[in-house]
Length: 156
Image 1 (cartoon, rainbow, N blue to C red):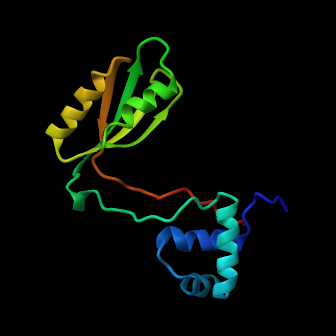
Image 2 (tube, helix red, strand yellow; image 1 turned 45 degrees about the horizontal axis):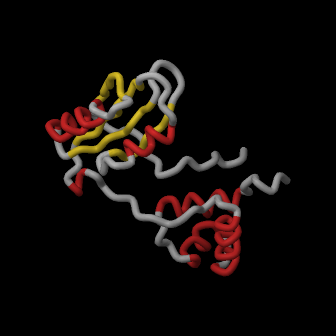
């Protein structure tokens, strides 16, 4: 078996922890039919391998006052490095994620804002970055699927 491949028990453990990172080893063990010490050993190995990078909390943006979400496509002037793009967008608390992409667009930024006016201000600030030629925004109407991280499908 490929050492990087996750076995079905590791996958099951990851699913439980993705649903509730605060679950105890005993709770995870109950869900996957392992003892708490066996779960701890597997979680420790998953952490050592870098599969688990940390444990976190998932927040509800709307409960925190962030009611508006959009994807902003950024078209860069000339040749702009990913490091320059990252340095610019990291300064924005409203940026949830940013990725360089293929095609006509250079950078796609996911933004959360309090309301439309706040979103407009963020887009204006992004458009004013020295390397930005233009932007194009798409506003999210409803989020249909949100996963904290993609998990591998169970082996068939």
